[in-house]
Amino acid sequence: MRMTRRVLATSALALAAAFSGVHALAADAAWPTRQISIIVSYPPGSDTDAVARMLGEKLSQRLNQPVIIDNKPGAGGTIGNTFVGRAAPDGYTLLFTPNPFTTAPMVMRLPAASSYDVLNGFEPIIQVGTQPLVLVANPGAGVKSVPEMIAAARSGKQLTYASPGAGSPMHILGEWLNHDAGVKIQHVPYKGVAPSVNDVVAGHVNTAWVTLGVVAPYVAANKLIPIAIGDAKRSSLAPNVPTLAEQGYKDVVVGAWNGFFAPKGTSPEVVRMLNTHLNAILKQPDVVAKLATFGTLPVGGSPEVLKETNATEYKVMGKVIRDLGISAD
Image (cartoon, rainbow, N blue to C red; front, side):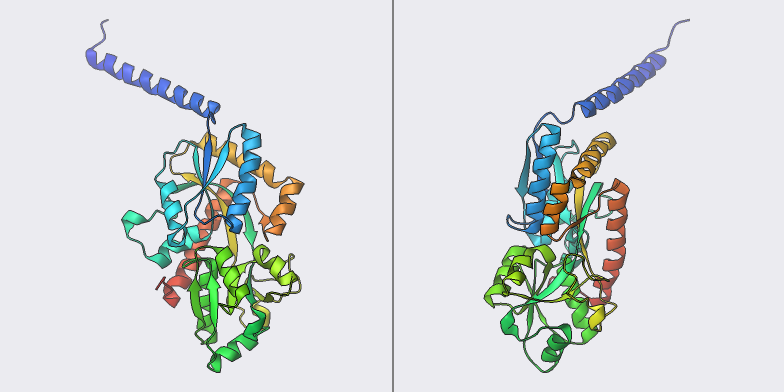
């Protein structure tokens, strides 16, 4: 029996598809064969940058390939995030980001052409850790507790608080506290944590919401006063600092987290390999100890853990942003 041209064509396509799949699997098995770039959407010197560099070095050792950190700061982190969202899904461009990844697009109100799909535009790889947020004050501000700060603001004193940028959890936390306390402590956004802390230490800004690890040396040197933890419970890294709930604001709870994402369409096998390597790295005692100096508690787990964390952040913080009308303006 002779095959028709249609049958031959169909068979050829099926064969090509089969070999295409084999080729893709072979490519995954060979990955990585060259340098990997980790995009950080914040400037050098930030705690996000420091953690990325440490993990990148460890990852390079395990993969036997160079891993570089490429800083692309600006627009609340959305510039770097958008860059990765549009990168080739080949496993050679990754994103390491804190949770403004989720909230910044809502606060910045970017046009679609300049933004990204928070929930479906990336492949989650792993949640690296969580970071408690702490409110610190310059000693010259004259406030040592949240009630003192709120009382000063209500009396007409012009107070300011710094954050590492619009849409950051620190910004949301500051505006949420403003709302629940019925005061207006002026937000001063910066391009990253380091410059915001520097200006509070210098006295240019009264207070700041920051990650705990960044300000630990300044607190130890009595250059900054820790006032409150933004989480629901006290941090094991700063057990003597009371929460907002303990000081009368039980509903105001915001934490920070960070993790790795890849462009949408990245091979599941590449994602699995990265997840496996990074989970192993996060269990190394020297890594756990170093993360603690950044105020970070390791999380790890499957990509689903990060996916769920991101989705919860989008739902819960999205409602807070909408209800309070928080914006970059």
